[in-house]
Length: 108
Image (tube, rainbow, N blue to C red):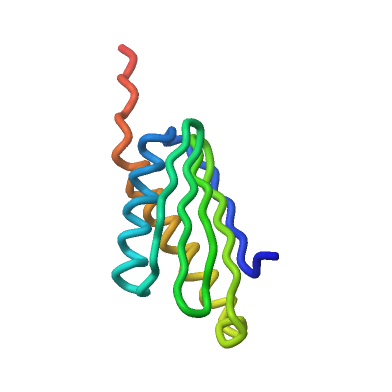
């Protein structure tokens, strides 16, 4: 059972959601020494991540992200802080990509 579970809805579609997930994976690999593997599918991708004391996965779909992680014994006391930081990173990545969306044409 996961210690950490996050769900985020979005309207990016799968190609742009993949970009967000790839950027997130690159960041956690660099900053947190995670090992990430992305398994692409037709309708959704699975991004698996792990390091000592943490393992989990992120489902990357056209309309949402679902992230779940299991924390080792030494990290469980920091669950609140970890959840806040992961939420912040994911929300910022989604906001940044959403801001790139083309604006609808103005009606005259």
